[in-house]
Image (cartoon, rainbow, N blue to C red; front, top):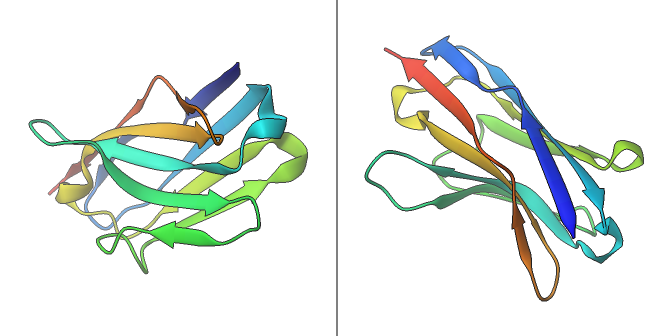
Length: 115
């Protein structure tokens, strides 16, 4: 099992910044992808950014140039730095960790961007 603990959501004005953190514990040796997804009201959950074990990152087109995903391997933690936030970034953000056979999810953290 893998446990994911998220922090860093909140309310911010458009143009502002937030930083999300996700700390993993448990059977993390099997994890080869970590990142963030989000789900806005009435919409499907969508990928925001993921980092693969080799270090490559993938971003949704809507966040490229504004969001940066990084990781601290010593702390088994990934960080999502979100700059130039827009109202359309408002959603519940979920941390995800994936092995070859399973997906693990955090409890979600609310990000609200006011116009």
